[in-house]
Structures are given as structure tokens and as C-alpha cells.
Length: 271
Ligand code: IPD
Ligand code: CA
Ligand code: CA
Ligand code: CA
Image (cartoon, rainbow, N blue to C red; front, side):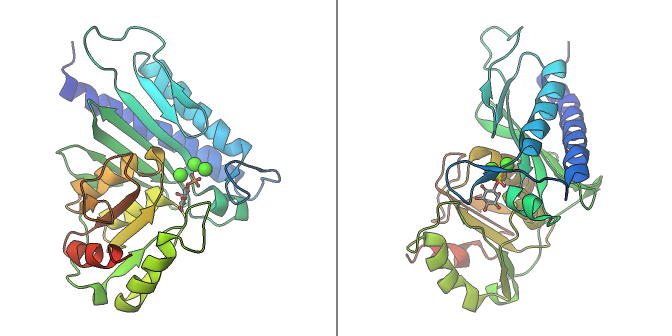
């Protein structure tokens, strides 16, 4: 029988395969989608491609790991089909089948597929796949972070002034939104600011040093589960915007290379 460390290696391989399959499907549909519907607000879009991508990932995970639970953005939680191990909490897959739906609908090739595995309360595997650049970012708890099989690290900038920082906007944006107030405080103090539109990929970009830091409010577990592990395993730091320990139910996330973390916490906590 496989021990629980060995079985993570095979789970990582299947998670990568699932992200590749779903990514290929989403990439091929880019520019061909004519219909979308809305969810929580008029700006919160969903397409048939989101749903089909989730179905593809769930099918592969279910075939290989029938005893696991699966949480997907579009379909909610699926309980194990069979064979849960006695006395052991089942592993939970957390998937975002298309992170960056607005970009996708607009034909803007910046989106990703995110697959994470939670075991006993910790994220232990994370995969973020960018099908437009064929870049797969992945991490295995305590074994580092990788981009297309090369190890990656966060950036080395020491000050905000030399940092490229990123954020994102929640779907129900109010004029008093923390994000907007934060931007007033952060934008004048950094090299530049971005909002690229895929939380999972933005976290992967912090992990590989393309971005120095990233914060966002009111995300969901599937947006951040994989990316959080990528950043940590690449040597970065992940907390809430107030600098408190981050959990998947936290109201905000701040991920940086570690070196600019306390400076950003100070700015983001002003409001
Ligand atoms: C969204 C993206 C976006 C972020 C939104 C998320 P979705 O996810 O990650 O960057 O700003 O808050 O909901 O809906 O495209 O999977
Ligand atoms: Ca969505
Ligand atoms: Ca998402
Ligand atoms: Ca999504």
C-alpha cells in the first residue's frame, strides 16, 4: 500500500493532467463563446465552458480518487463515490475550472485553471495552468515550487519603490470598497500597479517573481487555494491584508516576496 506521502506524488500527476485537459478545452473555446449568463451580479459572468471545464476535471479526479471530496466553483461540493478510509478525513480537491472568466469572455488571453488538494486542513498540492502560454505552475508542500519543471522563487526587490504590485476587483464593487481606498495608498508608492484578472495566475506570478506582491479582497477558496501554496513554496509570504494568518475563509489575501510584506501591510491597514 502507498504511504500518504507517496500517494501525493501520484495525486500531483493527475492534478496536472486534469489542468492540462481542461486548459486545452478552454483555450480551444477562446473567441468562440457567444453566450454567457450572470451569477451574483451583472458583472459576475459564467459560460458553458466554465461548467464543461469543471466536469472534465471532476471526471478525471473521480476516476482516479473515488474516495476524495471535490469542491468546484460551479458545481459546489461532491461527496466521495466510495471507499473512504475509516477514521481518516477524506482529502478535498478545490478547483477553479476557469479563473478569469471575464477575460475569457472578452477574448483576452489571460486566465487559468486552478487545482488544489487540502488534507487535514492544509493545502498540500497546488497546480495553476496557463493554457495560453503553456505554463504550468505547481507545488507540493515542503518540496518547493516549479514552473514547467524548473524550480522557481519569488523576486528579490527590497522596497515598494522597485516593486510591481497587483490587485483585483470583487464583482460587487461599491464606491467605498477597500480595494479602491487601498489603491490610493499603494499606487503612488510602487513602481507600478496592475489588475490582470485571474487571481490564481496572479499568485503564480508572485511565486515566479514576475510580480512582487498581490492583494485582493473577498475571494473564494477556489481562487486562492493552489496559488497560496505556490507562493509559500517559492519562498514568499501569504497573510491577510492586515498581516494576520491567512485561511481559505479570510476576507482578504496579501501575497508577496516577503521583503515588502510589512510595508504593504502597513499601507493596506490604513483604512
Ligand atoms: C475571478 C478572478 C478575478 C478576481 C475575481 C474572481 P472567476 O474569478 O480571479 O481576478 O478579481 O474576484 O472572482 O470568477 O473568473 O473564476
Ligand atoms: Ca466565476
Ligand atoms: Ca476564480
Ligand atoms: Ca472560475
